[in-house]
Amino acid sequence: MPAPDLEIDCRGLMCPQPIIDLARRVGDVPVGGVVAVVATDAAARHDVPAWCRMRGQEYLGQDTAEDGVPRYVVRRTT
Image (cartoon, rainbow, N blue to C red; front, side, top):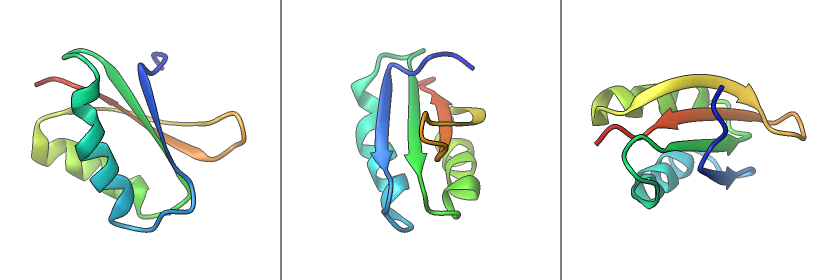
C-alpha cells in the first residue's frame, strides 16, 4: 500500500461524514496522489469504494492506522 499524501481522521464520525470529508479534501492532493480515510464507522468499508466508483477515483484498498483503526486508501485520478 502506498504511503498517503494526506490522511483524513474521521474517527468517531458517522455516515455520511467520512465521505463528505473525503470529497472535500481529495482535491488537496495532486492527481496521482493518495488519500487515506481513517474511520471507525463500519459503513465506510462500503462507502469509500462506492464513492470511488461513482467519482472515477481509484480505490486502492484497506489497511490499518497505527492504532488499529481501519484506513481506506484512494488514489486521485482526476
